[in-house]
Length: 73
Ligand SMILES: [Zn+2]
Image (cartoon, rainbow, N blue to C red):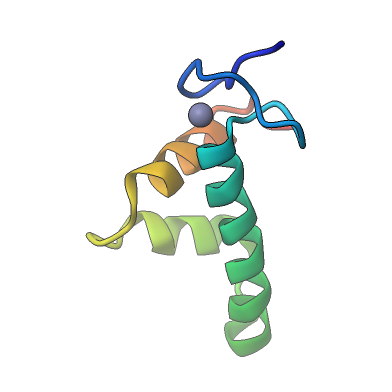
């Protein structure tokens, strides 16, 4: 069983991330579809905008760090 590269918990059956971080990743992608329709914002700008939000959850913030680290598939 592999471990989540962000937090070291056991990976979710759907991928390399744990359930918490996989859920955060799913939410990121779903949110981007909505934003893209409204604002035609690109992925990097979307992440920048989210990251600047004070209320952004810890899980999502860690996933964004992970994506930006270049280790995300
Ligand atoms: Zn994790």
